[in-house]
Image (cartoon, rainbow, N blue to C red):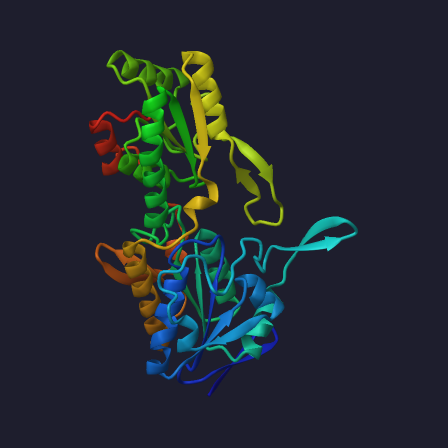
Length: 375
C-alpha cells in the first residue's frame, strides 16, 4: 500500500480499485439513470462496490450517500432524471452560505475531500457538463481520482462529438415544432419557440432543422431584425401565411445583447437567460402586423424518457467509465469520437467551449432548404 500525503491529509491508495463513488452534477437530463446503471451493473465483475452520492457535489460536501446494488438500478434505463438527485448549486469551490440574511460564497472543497476519504473511495465518477468537468479538474488536483462522463443537453463540450441528453432535448423541440406547425398554419400566425442552450446554439439549430423551422436564431450568429421581418413577409408573398421561429435563449441581435432574466450568485455562472422569445415575438408583431405567439419549452427539454440513441450512448459511457476506473486511468473524461467511445484528459475537455461554427454542415444544410438565420 502506498501512502500519499496531500495538504496535510493522508490518503491510502491500494493496488486495486475496489470502491468507487458516482454522482450526477448540474442540471438533470434524460440518460443519467442509464449511465448509473451502466456503471453499477458491471461493478461486481470488476470486484468493485459502488457508492451513489446524493444530490451531486452537495452530497459530496455534506456527506450524503447510499450503496448501489444491481437491484437499485434494475428497470431505470428508460427513466428520466436521476435516482441520485442532482444540483447545479453545489460547487464545493463556490459554496453558498446564508449569513446575517445575506448569501456569502465559501470554499468547501476540504469537506468534499474528507468525505471522499471517509468513504474509502478509490475513484469518483462525476456525470455532468462543463461546470462539473471544471470541478473534476480541481478535485483531481487535490488528490481525488476523478473520471468524467459528459452530460449536457447543450452539447457544448468540445472534446466529445456528442453529449448524452442532447438528442432527447432535440427530439422534444422537433416534436413541439411539429405540433405548433398545424396551429400556426390554421390561424395564419407566427409562432416563436424559445429553447435552451445557454451560449451554444446546438439545440435550436438541430431542433429547428428537424422540426422544419423557417427561422433559427442562435447565439453564434447575431441576427438582423429587418432580415427576420423580411423572411416572414416574403413567405406570405409565396402564399405561406405562417412562420415558425426557433430561437435559442442566448440569441442576440446584431445591435443588442443577450436577454438576461436574472442573476443567481449561488451558481458559479450566475447569469439566468430567458426572455428572448417574448422580445422576438413582440418585435415581429409590431413590425409586420402579423399575429404572433410565443412558446417557451423550458424544462420540458430536460424531462421524460431518453431517446434510444441517448439510452445506448449513456450505457456505453457508463460501461467505459468503470473500465477506466478499473485500469486506473484517472483525470480522464469519456468521449464519443465518431462511432467509438474513447477518453480524453479532463483538461482537454474544458479547454474550449463547443459552439456552432457558421460554416458547419448543419448550418449549410439549413440554409440550403431555405431556413433563415436572420443574417
